[in-house]
Amino acid sequence: MPPTPSRWSSNLLFLIIAIGTEAGIANVWKFSYLAGANGGGLFVALYFIALIVIAVPALMAEMLIGRHGGKSAVGSMHILVSRDGIAPFWKIFGVMATVAVFLILSYYCVICGWMLDYFVFGLRGGFKGIDSAGAAAAYAGMLANPARMLLYSGAIVGITAVVVAGGVNKGIERVSGVLTPVRFAILTCLLIYSVGFADIGAAFRFLFIVDWSHLTAGVVVTAMGQAFFSLGIGVGVMLTMGAYMKPEYSIPRAVFTVAIAQGLVALIAGLSIFPLVFTYGLAPTQGPGLIFVTLPVAFGKMPYGELFGTGLFLTLSFAAITATTVILETVVSVLQDYSRLPRRTLTYAVAGLIWLAGIVTVLSFNRWSSVYPLRLLGISSTKTPFDLLDYLTSNLMMPAGGLMVALIAGWALSRETTRKELGLNTVAFALWRGLVRYVVPLAIVIIFLSVR
Image 1: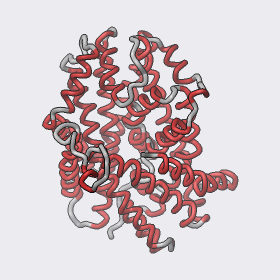
Image 2: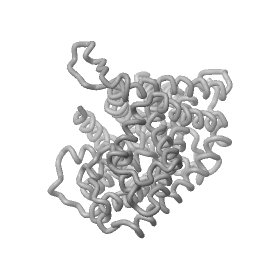
Image 3: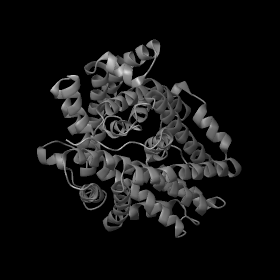
């Protein structure tokens, strides 16, 4: 198995790429609709508590495993078994993480394609004067057209493949190093617009005033799940980023920087979106359709709405690319560790398979929308093929992977190894180790048992 030659060129670029990867569309699209549906300020408060107590220790754990192993998800686990003497059983984590991230990317690229589709829709003037019926029809029309979805998901996959084929330094660093600051600048402009033209006060009250009367076990679990899964823990992505870290980079400092940045991005997105929702009398509890069905109605009414809407979906498209490149790198790095084929060949082959696998997701929204595979096994279920794929990866494989990360870092690796990688003082290390050994696994089990 050849050594992994890739290293991040600088700590700054590493941080930019890590932030760009973690602050993806989940922190704009999913955070916004979950906050809207789960009590606003209460959800935000619980989200940030979970981010610090659960997600940050787990992310530190995954990154230290990656840097200590120095290879792909699969390769690092082989190194840890042979060099550090952890149980061979843990090799299953590398394999499961690679399979999970491949499956996730197959449908994630389809959803990212929706962002690109709506950006083009905005460029063509689609948001001008659009009403609720028109917004619903536009969204339904996109989902009903498999060729159109395959075209835009193919564009996302193609751009991602070109970037990753260029390598870590000449591909991922160059593209993410530009797109991440640009999309943050666009998001800031959107926030400024909302401050000047919409009800920013209502948005502040909604997002920052905590109404404890809405506190339920379901809201707590949802906030924990968003904090944990928005960082993509348990599927080898941050393990791979850790493998490319130089020894002098501080893992705790990097993780806290990334966590704070992605939390701020989520808040800026919320403060950009919810003022429009309240100004134009829309409902903040619309769920996943908030971005695609509810907000376009505001775009059709507000001054310069076409520009705002197009800018929002451009930001989401950039967010998609900065995330998919590192996710694809996670799969390619595994193949590089075990293959002599050129990087470009491996990258384009994997990208092609991902696009083909995405056909399952695309058809689930139209031609296969009434196909329920579990019924073939005698199980009463209305889950489409996409629903099953999402359930398998998000509700089973990611929690299992996150649990393994916590157990490997907290129990399988020696105390000396993890302390050396983290470089924490005695008190801080004891706190991290206690969280990753007990609190993080317990939280993951709660999330796992709560999903349906």
